[in-house]
Image (cartoon, rainbow, N blue to C red; front, side, top):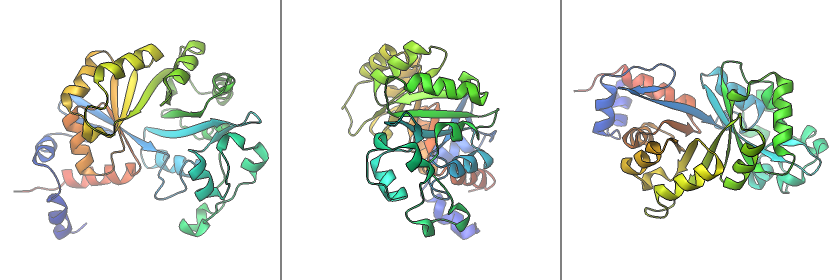
Length: 289
C-alpha cells in the first residue's frame, strides 16, 4: 500500500485506536496492554474461496487464523452438513431447499452454481460434511461449531465424529442463537465449551442481565454479540463480571476493530480475517504525526 493510500485510510481511523496501537505488539491475536482480543475467521475466508467449504476453512487456517467459525445442520438422513442456511444453499450451490432436507448423495454430488465467481482452483468445491471439516482442523487450532439444524442425534453424532477424527473436545466450541439447543447439548456432553449468540438491533433492546440469565441457564461460558455498535463498554463489562467471555461479530475493518477494543471484547469474528490482520500489521509499521 502506498504512502498516499495510507494517508487516506488513516482519516477513517479513530484517535483512540491509534493511541492503543502506539505501544502494542501483534502476537497472533490483537494485544492491547493487558488485554488480548482473539480473531476468528467467519466461515473461512469467504471473499477468496466459497464460504463454509473445506477449501475456505483450510485457507483461513493456513493464513494464520487460530479458530474458524462454521455452521452445521443435521439432515433428514442423519448427515451432518456444513452449510449456513437456505439462502447459501441456493445461491452458492443452486439447491433450493432447506438444509435439513439434504441427503448425503446431494451433498457428495454438489457443485458450485457460479464457479466463475471464484478462482478456478476452487471449481471442484463441494458441500462438506462434519467429518470433512474435522479432517482439516490442525491439532494446535480450534473450531467454533454453530448449531443450525438441531435434532436429538446432533450431539451424539458430533461427539462421535470428533472422536473418530482424533480431536480433543477442548478444540471445539459449540454455539447457537438457540439457548435450548446449547443447554441440551451441554447436558449430554458437559466437557464441551459452549457459547450463546445474540444479535442486538437497537440500543435498549435487551439488557446485559437478560443475556447473562439466558447464557447461564444454558450452561454457556461465552456470549457473542452482533449489532455491537448498539452497546457500550459498561454493557460488556457487566457480562464479563458475571464470569462470561464476550465476543462481537462481524468485525470487518480497523474501524470496527477500534470499536471492539473500546468495548473490551475478548474475541472478534470476521469475514475478512486475513485482511484485518494484514491491515493491523501494516498500520503498526507506520508512523503518523
